[in-house]
Length: 109
Image 1 (cartoon, rainbow, N blue to C red):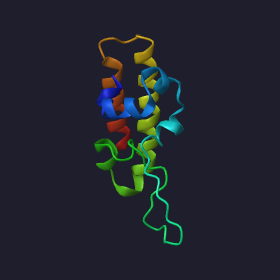
Image 2: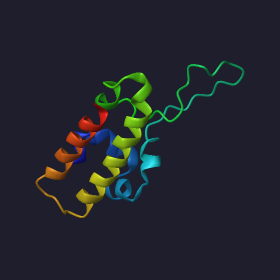
Image 3: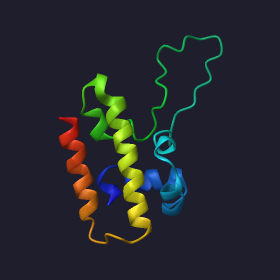
Image 4: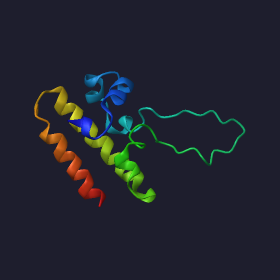
């Protein structure tokens, strides 16, 4: 169900599995896959903080630049909720995940 929001293999591998992803808060899901750069003595103007896998997914990248952080937080929250539903086997057909995608698209517009 949350696979409709992000790439399932990458997010699951970085999180350590579905159960650990479902136990993780949304603020930490936002940081999964973050590039850590050591720029001692160099300018940090090009480094975007809090940009992990969620920030670079197509749903977030297709929004205007000034709204990307807000949409990334929304996608991270929805991924966390969908992982919790998947972990508890509440919606096996995936309807809830598709509803979340439509909610994100309508809130983004």
